Image (cartoon, rainbow, N blue to C red; front, side, top):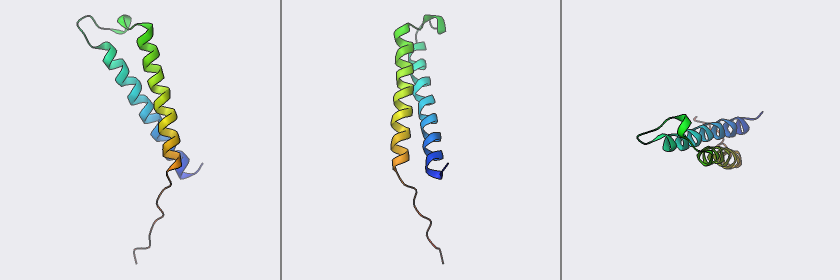
Length: 73
């Protein structure tokens, strides 16, 4: 694996986890909250947020090249 692909994988995983947890946090807000109160539609929304974040961030990050180190001498 190249440095660029590892960067893309890490970026995609981190973004996907953040998007998924953010969607779940939104669904869990309220007076009567808990995992049993989350509807099927809210689970679908959280899962879609995960996939969109992983696919979008991974693809974009992989396309951006790393800067080449410059000689500091």
